[in-house]
Image (tube, rainbow, N blue to C red; front, side, top):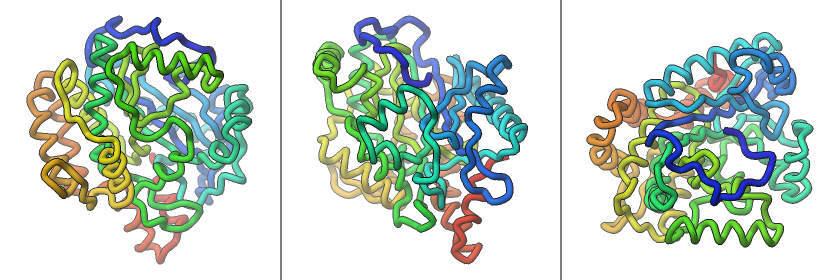
Length: 372
């Protein structure tokens, strides 16, 4: 599910090519020195070592040599995705250990410096650096992406439009990047502030239908602004080549249980709004609510039609709305993990507790986000 190396015409889409609401999950891991917990290069070695193995198709390079992506295949259910995610994490841990490395999972490394990280030697990354310059070079961030299959391109656009209003909930639940360059930022998820320097990022625009979306992409491609639609990095977007809606707004999370719960939340949201009318959040409100969730995490208060509302209450309300869809999808048990996040806190809160307990030592935070 990594981005394309060659241009793709969005009208050659695969919406409806498979079963509705199948899911796929991508996790971006940081590679760590096992003693110092500094970022460490090793992606090329992991890719080479596993190329001919059973998971060779589930690992992909990313921008930096200290970053590697593992992704599931197409899963019929969230339960199947959970099984595959656990297996992938076990494999990734073993692959890293074989190269003398550890894995970490968070939205940012707590004290890493992008100036010290080597960019992968790939044409697409070199082209990105050439075009976007500083915005790319400082993009030392890690995300969790969830794909859900939708049967019809217009319905996919409707889902994207509606789920924009729920981005703040997903940010608050997944927030796992309170540190940057060795210091607390005051944000639960500073990853969003870093990535906002990219063009075509943040909450997506509202499109009337798929044809309008396709025409916009055509204009950008024709003008040489983008290679193809994969160079739109919105928080949620249609992914025509895969026939999915892709939710990209979440930080990488340290606990696999959180990744599974968030996958269930996304799948149920897509089912809720597939072919149904959804909230018409004004772009200003969607942007503001996302910013507040990134700043305050689960303690955010966001704007709505009835005034201010704690994001926790919004999430609880959404969980009630999603309950019948979760039952139909068979992901009730996995969705219950969202209640665990509300009760125990998100990754940002755990990182800040580790930092304080260690006497404000960011290296203790790196140890806390190491997995396995």
